[in-house]
Each structure stands twice: as structure tokens, then as C-alpha cells.
Length: 256
Image: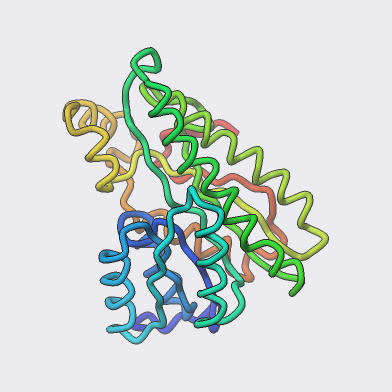
């Protein structure tokens, strides 16, 4: 693609929730660095459009329908990607969903959906991808958590719990898989200007304004801000980094 950067030349990456938002930015960045990318998303039409945009600029991309809450779909998606693009070198767990409201107003149905997408989804995708990585003796896994999982966030109790759980899960995987030369790392966005955030805050426009004011860099994150961090973790530049958690939040959270 246009940048000419090729740290990931020929690597195969599957990115969940990659049709739009942060996932789309990650897919675009990895394609720019010459990876072959699978746009895995429940929204097949938008995933197809994103894949077409990548191919139109000279990249290699495949749209794959995936509901991350289903282990069977995750296994099928991995099989299709490996048939059409080749063995998977990189997994980026990005798909997520949230509903912002006080915990006492949450319903069990909301808990179930938040947990199924944000926590069980990455478990399903890791379960589907890891055996192949182990057999080949290499791989890179990056999971998109959240600063909500590091420090908590008003109105996001169950979401924050899932994201905190992903940090512990990823650190444990990093220990278990290091002997297989598989790196497992975590990127934690702060508030990021995406359709999901706008939807979650649809009835709280002033909250978005206050979020930006509370960030030392005085702006919400952009999807592209996260893509560079992921590109680092999936490249050879991070071969000796595993079990790490990187916050990309404009300075909103700085504690270790």
C-alpha cells in the first residue's frame, strides 16, 4: 500500500470487529505494513466494504462473517482465513460492546451481552487460533482492553470488569505460551471517538465534552491512535515483549 512500510510483509492477521472504528483503523494500518488482513465482523456488509477499500489501495484483505460470542463461528472463521490467506500469524481481539448506565439499572440481559461479547468473545477467538500458532511455533496476540479495566469507569461496571478480566487472562496466556514463541499483549484505549462511544453516550452529550476536557491532551482518542500501538505489538519490534499492558489515552491514566 501507499506507505511502503513492510514490517509485516506476508503475515496473516485476523482482526475482530474490524469493519469500523478502532478495528478498521487497525486493519488499515496492518495492511499498510503489508499484512494480509481478515476483516472479521458480525456486520458482513460493512466488513466487505472495508476489505474492498484495502484491496483498492493495493492491499490484501478478506471479509469474514463472525459473531465472536460463538466458538463454532470463531473456529469456522479461522479455518476460512487459513484456507484463503494462509496460516494465521496475528490475532487482534478488538470486537466489543457497551451500554453506559449505573450498575443498579443494569439488567441481567445486559450483563450477559456485555460479558458474551467483551470477555467470552476473545476467549473463543484465542481458543480457535492458538493451536495452530503452537503447532507452528510462533504468533502474536493483541487484545484491546480499556482503561476502564485498569481504573474503573462510571456507568461501565460490567464492561470494566470484563476488560479487567482480559488483562489477567492475557497475562496468564503470555506465561503459558511463551515457550511456544507466542507473544500476548494488551492495548488499553481511553475514551475514543467511535460510533460505539457516540451510541453509548447518545443521551449524555455533555459527558463527551467533559471527557475531552479531563484528558491532558484535551481531545478524545482517534482510532488511528490505537493502530500504531497494535502494529508495534504484532511486529518483530516487540519480539521480547509479552504480558504487557499499554495505555493509549492521551495521558488520562498514568498509574502503572
